[in-house]
Length: 301
Ligand SMILES: [Zn+2]
Image 1 (cartoon, protein in one colour):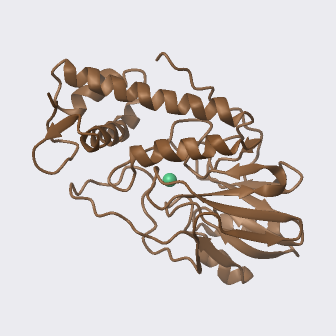
Image 2: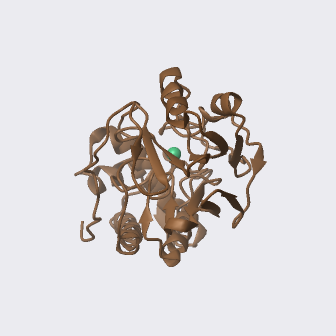
């Protein structure tokens, strides 16, 4: 790969422990490590006294007990959810019931999949409903903290990131992860939206990003630029594969992702599909029938 993404993977933490990671932020890592979640879901607790919490994580009793202990005698008032995947949102309702906090997230609008593929990531939390539906730029405050909601579609169509104004920090959820590239799984994931959301976050010049999975990103601008360059290079690779006569995504992935863990190849197929859908949208590629992973694609002349 010509573009090197400056991945960050060193992470100092222990399951079941609350860690003060900045003046206003504490982190708890859920014990749900895996190929998509890295060490597990990083749950962030913001403030002192009256608290906000970002992405409560999986609905596992022992994990929720850890969160309740972390909250202790303080008061949880706001739960913010970045998106409705099983490793992010299911603990929201049980936690809200135990604390009285309100759940904040964007409105659900899952796109129907014309290809009926089995979900490859952690899966959708289809039972999720927020108490408060958010829009871009909505702000919420507690003692000493202000959270701003930022629409960041791409990983999913409803993805929200949350800025902590006092620390010029952003909780980007799965939009930007330090340890790995994020998954853009169509039809809910959208490559063009993802690239636009990367540019949007880059232009805000945050001092630090606190992703749900993995350690913080301390130099967001070059990091985000590397992600943009990486995706545009992938797009060029897809075009080169098509130019060489390959029509099936599976064949392209074998060559393009030779250096990637085989377990992630089915996910890579969806990532390439996301690129192909963008090229369809841009009018550079054609296919017959619904644009699915197993379909054939070719360059338009
Ligand atoms: Zn996700």
